[in-house]
Each structure stands twice: as C-alpha cells, then as structure tokens.
Length: 181
Image 1: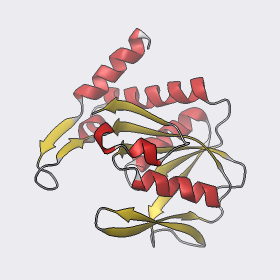
Image 2 (image 1 turned 120 degrees about the vertical axis):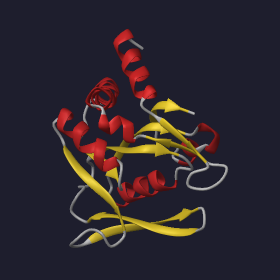
Image 3 (image 1 turned 30 degrees about the vertical axis):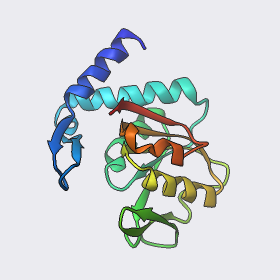
C-alpha cells in the first residue's frame, strides 16, 4: 500500500471509537460517527474506496448502499466513480414495486428490499456498508442482486469483525474492508 494510502488508513483508524458493552454486555461496539464529523477522515474513507474500485474493477455501473450507514458512504463513492446509487432498505420503506429477500438475524428474521426497476439485468454493482459482522445483511443484498440478475463485483466496508467470519457467508463475492478487528 502506498504511503499516502497508509496515512489515510491510519487517519480512519484514529476516528473509530469503541464502546464496551453496547448494545449489550460483552459487545465492543465500533463507532464510525467520528469519521462523519471530520471532513478529512470522511474524505480518506472515500479516497480509499475509490482507489480500490478503480484498481480492481474495469466497469462499475452502480453502487448499492445498505440501510442505513451504506447510505452515508455509497452516494459519495458513486459520485466519484460517475455512476448511480441504489438503496437497499428494510422492508416497507420504499415506494412502488419492490423485490425483497428474507434473511436471518440473531433472534428472528428481517427482510431487505430494493425498487424493482433500480437494477437492470447484467449491471455490474458494488455493495457498500459500514460494517461486516455475521454477513447477514450483505448476504441479503447479494441475494437481491442475484434476483435482479446483476453482477456483484464485490462488497466494501469500513470495518470487518474477522472473528464473526461474515466474509465466508458472502463467498464467492469478495470483501474489501479498510479495517479488521
């Protein structure tokens, strides 16, 4: 990694706050909110995502952001790449005809959806979110893309919690994470 990229990564790392026992005892929550408050840190995140996308993917048609923090970073990356941005939302939050997929949570299930006309068959897409833990939400988004016959180029996150092994759930799709814990 170039020195400039390494310094940007260090800046991002310094802007991750830790909250022990949130949202429940035994969980160490990694908070990205300080990144959003600091223009240089936010720019560093988007620079690193853009650098990865341009280096690894010849063509990107859309950036797909996951509810809700993917909505913060996805449009900025899409704008840099000169492509559109699409929302993956929790069920019932989008108007018009939608396509949905159910996925498992720790206690129960949830559904994610996109507008039916948001992604065309054959489009090449990048999925983006803030965090990869168990992989359930990103897996659901990949399933939505499969239903729409889009090609998932890869998944991008700021933080990957390696011990939860979420990336294995996403195979064969690649995961690019800025920080791993």
